Image 1 (cartoon, rainbow, N blue to C red):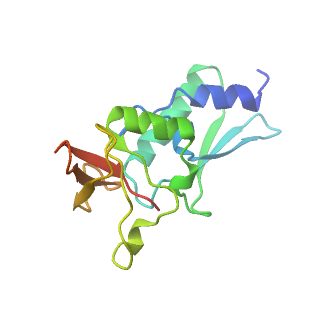
Image 2: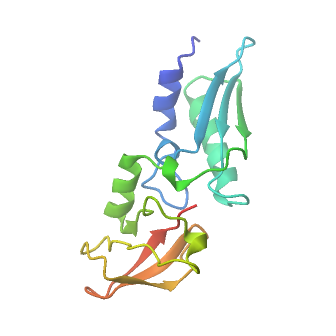
Image 3: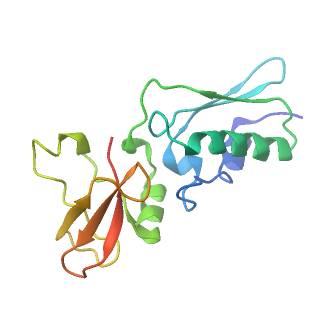
Length: 163
């Protein structure tokens, strides 16, 4: 079977994040490369959102399953840690999907780990659009999210942390 990297990218659109099912691995920007080897091996290179992310094993299995289901028998998924993943790699479509799902997308140009030394980012409430929000907890429903609340509509929401 002839292998075309555009076809592979399209197939990977079927693989969703098990923790945030409205996002694909392409939306998250964790697919770093698709390599076609001379021996027929198809290699997909991924970078985890953070070191130790529990979803990465499931994502790897799902990538392999989708590709093998479509007839690509020789598949290898390789994890690379450098360069480290950043929320800047989330696509605009991914950011829109997060917001529509009720999770505030990461604020561009901020790095959460500096929150102790600078003003926190103005996080927009995905329910009403207000930036009159505050962090309730650095830890949300998963390790990559923080819990915020809107001071206008009073709704709690997850915020996808920047890094």
